[in-house]
Length: 216
Image 1 (tube, rainbow, N blue to C red):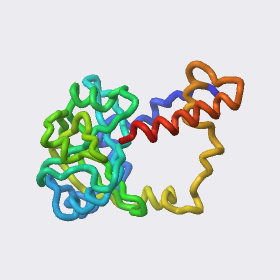
Image 2: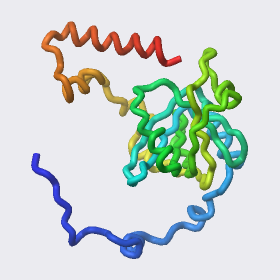
Image 3: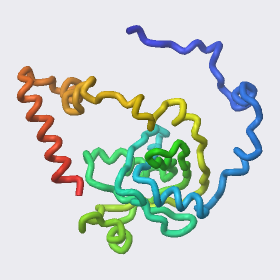
Image 4: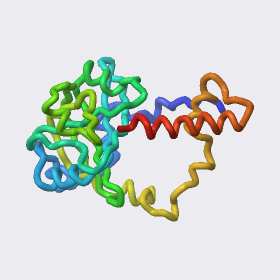
């Protein structure tokens, strides 16, 4: 596969050119942006078991990380403040390192079966306050730290993307076995996959056992 090169003749390089491609923003789309967590935003967060966390490092390099827990795992501290527990992971700390360097974050809350999503933009701080962490314990295990987000912008996002993608439609669910396992992919990208399929099976089973032992 040859490298793709962008034709500079077709590059949109300023906002005026960009907005010229689209109709004006609908009045409701502009008005729906809030600066606090109203009752509807709070109800959405309390139902959500999954949020995507977008961050940037000091140089502007972007990253998006999935965060999941029992529904309502993101704590609403007040109308302007959220707390997200940091559960055990791979210890790359990409999102956390980014927040230390650049506090600006974006959140996308998802509820299974809902086509609408909730978007929140704000600034984040990492804290180890035990009074905060204890409120987010699961099976008596408190998170190591919490991401405190000061809310700057809140709005409900329409259903078009989820409806186009048929994300919740079982008829469109795909068979995970049609692709290699997670560790198979990582080994293929790094050290190489073992020749013995049985050894690969044991490696995959070891990952499942690690999930059971370390998630909570």
